[in-house]
Each structure stands twice: as structure tokens, then as C-alpha cells.
Image 1: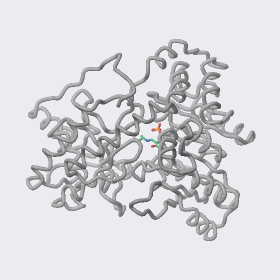
Image 2 (image 1 turned 45 degrees about the vertical axis):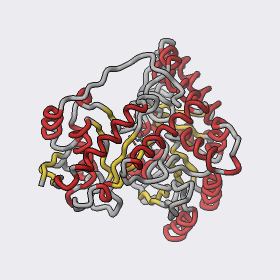
Image 3 (image 1 turned 90 degrees about the vertical axis):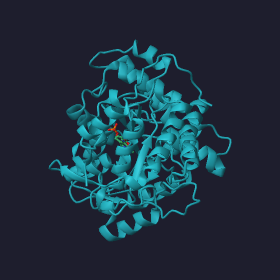
Image 4 (image 1 turned 180 degrees about the horizontal axis):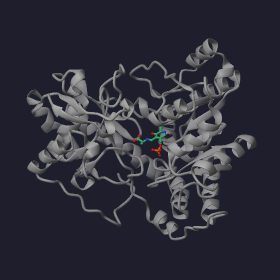
Length: 442
Ligand code: F0G
């Protein structure tokens, strides 16, 4: 059951089939090039696209737009201290701004940074500072309840190989976005803390989806049965020396982010770098009203009715897709359902981007916008060809989920007629190609 009702609405529109055909062709079969007004259901990301509450909108009116010493900043500080247990924060315009602040201070040329699995922007910031990102995920069994976990042994092996002195930081991303949004257990965070101590590394948690992770812990980790999500959220983050946060996820806001640190010296360094890149340390590239929205959103994110309806809605979409015989990564993660495109469209070879073909067809059939995470987004990487269906927070209803499942059924009925895609234009940086490249049917 959704734990909210609509108070403000935004009309959405399904263009007719001819228009959709023309739009996707004109977009070069790349949904990043579509106008949002032409998208009926937008599952591109859960980042900054959710619906704010009446309390958040009310708080925004109170935004103190002072350059220094803003009251709104103090309210954000209090909220982060209460909800996440960090007293020292450096605000930033969004998650990657926070990553730039923290990793710019921690990582230097020749360093190695292990992570359960790096999210793209995290990887890019490690590389940008001269470091080498190393993924250390657990080898998962299908029935493992915490498939997002870090493998601490892989971190020890890396330290033996490259020298612990060359590993300034160990990162754990909760939930693990690049591993189908799967959760990390509190026990695994304790194990990560232990390794970080052994190798004398700063233990960083990428906390973007910390509340969703806490809900999975409540449901799946025996020790925490009956604990509140708010208490689990504080427990998970208590093991970290620092956190990086995108307010666009579990702070339920449209923009914003921050770094949280415990060590005073690290805090001072991060603050100085924040001033250089983001703005003075009581606004960090944001308006006072944006700080207010995060301050309220963080508190809402760890309430049981909210988080339960959030994560269970993702599971509900997963169930509807399974009923429609769509192969998905199961169990579903916290923010998205991941579809196995090669199984859904077995006739399209990997070089012809089965995931991107599926993304284009979802738009053509139902005005649904998803994102490919396979050969098109990550050229030459040996990884499964996935399509991510992200649910924005507090935004869609059961009927929208049913429309998504029906759209998949329609694409499935035409699977034998579909052809692959080839790239006809791409930007100079291959890593960024999926944002703007253009394709054509083979
Ligand atoms: N870390 C993780 C785990 C993320 O998922 C993201 C963003 C970031 C950092 C960067 O935050 O966007 O505020 O700069 N993920 C979005 C997504 C973009 O669609 O998964 P940001």
C-alpha cells in the first residue's frame, strides 16, 4: 500500500504511436536525446526525480539564503547528525560534487581504491585523482540475501599485492547500485571496518541509498529483526570514517549532496576543497531552500511507512514483470528492477546492443524510458546486458507499473521482428558515449 496520496499533480502524456516512432528515430535511438514531455513513464533514474512532501515544500519557504552561517545549513547539520550520526559536514551541489571534495583530499597519484563495486562517477573521481579503482564484490550465490556485499578477502589480497600504504581509502556503496541495487549487511560493514583498520585506510561509505539498505537489513539480517530502520541507518553508518551522499536519492530531494567526516583534520581539508569547488562551507553550491529540502527529506527517508512502500513498490514492479515472463535480476534491489536483455531478446547479438534495442522498443511501444547498462554504456566490458528500470520515489502508482509490464508484453510479442542497432556517431570520450551517441537499425 502506498503511504502517501497526491496533493499536487503533474499531467503526463502518451504521444501516439506515429509520434513515438518519429521521436525515437529523431533521438538516434538514444533515449537521453528525448524531450521529457514526450516520455510517458520515466524510469531513467531515481536521482533527483522523486516527489517531495508537503513538509519539504513548506520548509523550502524558510530557506535562509545568507552566503555564510545560514540557518538552513544548521538545520541540515542537525538532521544529518540525528539521522546519519555525522556532526561535521561539507555541503555540495550533488553526489559527484561530494565525491570530488572527498576523493580529491584522500586519493593521490599511484593509489588504489577498493570498493564493493564502483558507481561510474566514483570510479571517474578516483581516476581523476590519479588512483586506480578496484572492484571487490562478493561472489554471489542466487539465494544470498546480501548480494551487494564487499569481499574483505579481495581487499586483503589487493593490499598484499600493491602495499597497504598505497590504499588510502576503502569504499562500500550501499546499496550497491552497479550490482543491481543489492544491499550490504551490517555484518559486512563491520568486516569492512576491520580490514580498513588492518590496512590503515579511511573507511568511506557511499550512503546515497542508506535508508533503502537499512530496510533490507531490517527484513533480512536476523540480528536486526524488530529494530527500527532509523536505528539501523545509524548503526550502518557508525562504522564509517566518512560518508559521501547524493541528496537526490535518500534525502528525497531534487538536488544536493554532502560529505560527512569524523576526523577534524580531514574535515578541515575537505572544507577547504569544498570552498574551492562547491561554494562556501554553509551552502556548497546550493540555495538555502535546497538545504532545507534535504534536512526534512533525510528524516522522512528513515520512517517505516515511507521506506516500506518505497522498496516494496520496486518489488511489486519486479513481480509484475515476472508474471509477464520478463527475465529480471532477482531478488529486486532497492531502487530499480534490472532486466536481462540478452535473455529477453536472444536473437540480438551483444555487438548489436540488445539492451539498447529493448530500451528503444519500450519507448516505441509504451512511451516508457529506461536505461541500458551493457555494451552500449560500458564498451568492451564483459558484463551482463542489463536494462535498468528505476522508480522515482513517491511518484508512480500501481497503474503505471501495470502499463510498464504490458509494454514489455507487447515488445515480447514482436521480438522476432526486431533488428539490432549500430552506432553512427559517438563523442570523443568512449566512457561517456551512452549519453549522446546516435544509433541506427542494422
Ligand atoms: N554514488 C552512487 C552510488 C550513485 O548512484 C550516484 C548517482 C552517485 C554516487 C553520484 O551522485 O548523481 O548526485 O552526482 N547515481 C545516479 C543514477 C545518477 O542514476 O544511478 P549524483
